[in-house]
Length: 292
Image (tube, rainbow, N blue to C red):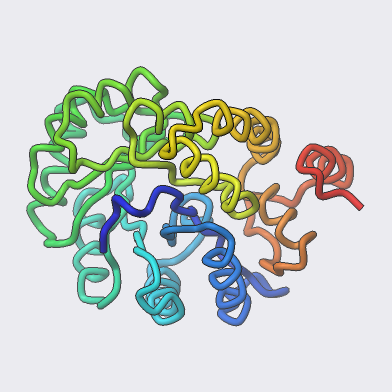
């Protein structure tokens, strides 16, 4: 799969039924909806997919079903990372046996707070034990540890580490783009930085907002590539407050609520996440311009 063509990759929500179990009929509807509305790739089993509350067996069945339903239409990236290097390697090896997974997303180890040497060693060990392409996920707000750009740049030299989902900000994105080869994929992990990141040479965005605004985000990138920079910037400015509203309550509660409101039924959330209150829901829908 050519990831360079996948500028808008959706970090896909996991649909649940009324009993809180994964619902594959809803998954089919969601995937078809996303691929018809701008998504050029999918991350399955990421944070937006509520990976912390999915069991390993659930992830395996979710990934297999996603591969079946996508049927080669776009690249699929599967979340396999944890804060346990041995477990990350074991699960990545299991996912490697599936046909149709194009890369794995491996998050920085959370909670145990390794230093830069430990972070490098973690990703190096995973890379040495799988043939699958690896995308690093640097999300300090959730993990409690930041992969410094210099560490990411060192890791980029390893053969099967092909990219990064970067949430450390524009300075980090700029440095990584500048200091790595052109084929190294740099994705903004923050929706509101999708356009600025693209302007400095990032590949695109791994996005939550693309569940709702995928077509607009594709248009934004298309306009920039056509050198209609002012028009692209206008789309960006209009999207920023909408993107921000999706994170006013712990994600993915707002995006699941909005999808359900649109008639794309993805069900509820697993504890410890809870649904938006009525007041939160109305505020978010008003900003999203999805209110009744």
